[in-house]
Image (cartoon, rainbow, N blue to C red):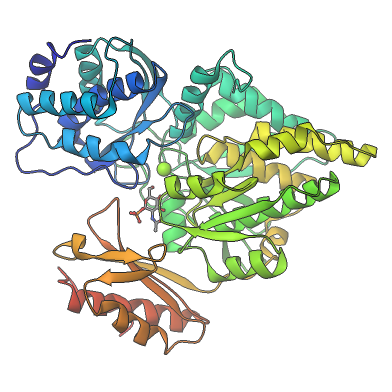
Length: 546
Ligand SMILES: CC(=O)N[C@H]1[C@@H](OP(=O)(O)O)O[C@H](CO)[C@@H](O)[C@@H]1O
Ligand SMILES: [Mg+2]
């Protein structure tokens, strides 16, 4: 491969002089039209990443998930469908910020040297995008990047983020013992649909599941999944499915909106007894919810999903008679305190905290035999470590019940998208457990009661001055601010609050929980006010409850 064509193509996608890009929690993310040069350059880097992996297929997804429709983003997917190895993030940022076309070329050369890349290897990239209006422009820029380096590129069209992760893993494992499935949309639907039916067939059928698809790519895709499953066990009604009309994506709907506001989305009428869930804009997050008899809204978020799944897996492992197979749970500091206590004290399962962002949770879950990880916002999955696969392979069932439990564990593994958190696969997993237990959403919700919580954003002059430690729960900078937060928290029974800079938005996040709704709000706004006053707040001071 030569870089000869790079300057010519690069000149078509000049970098805006006044913007600095950073590969953050979920790749690059900003106003879509400002991302053209970045996406072009991500194409170049994807080629080098593929070569550094001896020609394995690398994924490139163009999406800004739950963010505003005018935003867009791009991220790289590593060969097994996992997020890009962290050490490469710095290359991404450096390349995105290279000022001139010549600088682009020198950063590429620097990466080749640093990683000792054999550039004669044919690079392979699989890419896709969501439904955003800036998608076609950015896809064009990506294709130029891939053409500049003669990459063997495949376009998978408009699909969900987890579908592309799945496809990348399938492509790279084809023909091996770890073959993951058919690398296509149809292969995805068939793999997960079949595993689901294997687990539920013969049980009583559930009522309709109402899905809020956030007017995003999850809408057409979940309909295709339902067509493929074609069974009363998966009887769905899709709401907020308008991907054509501008201005609707994620607006007053979707998993992020429902979780942040703790109320139902627009476009869905919820009635007691009904079953509801919301995807986010690229369908990698899911939350469930219902209304009780008196019409009150109740959210079943990522923590509730994680505890449901961990309990089910723990019980199956025990029914299978496998004694040395441990289920563990990974959470972030945003997990509701009640869920953490429940996992430790009632389920008696090990639990650890990771930093925000699924890549951090994923890595911690890999270290567990069966690692269940979810962010509170509904993004997560389950990983079966090779030791778990060995334990299942070598299991020696003594009774038909044990043999059945082992078969169910294998089927569950097929139902779960281990490459990344996936709204559709997670939905089938939750549906499976509810069908098997014959539980309503209200019964599922009874395991523990959430502490009231509140998540706020404070806009500051420079969020880079915020630095944290202790899985992001303690500020090390600005100096003295953590002491102020601690002093405020100490005044509230069961109070907990922490402050960290967002990795996806130009804001600082304040999380708080406490014994009552009133205390929780008071705590959140007092901490947010302190952040605003002591660390360069901009705009209006957060003061709702003061
Ligand atoms: C509190 C919160 O929900 N943070 C989200 C958000 O990250 P921030 O770094 O907080 O902006 O977006 C990430 C990407 O989608 C997601 O992984 C994470 O959980
Ligand atoms: Mg998402």
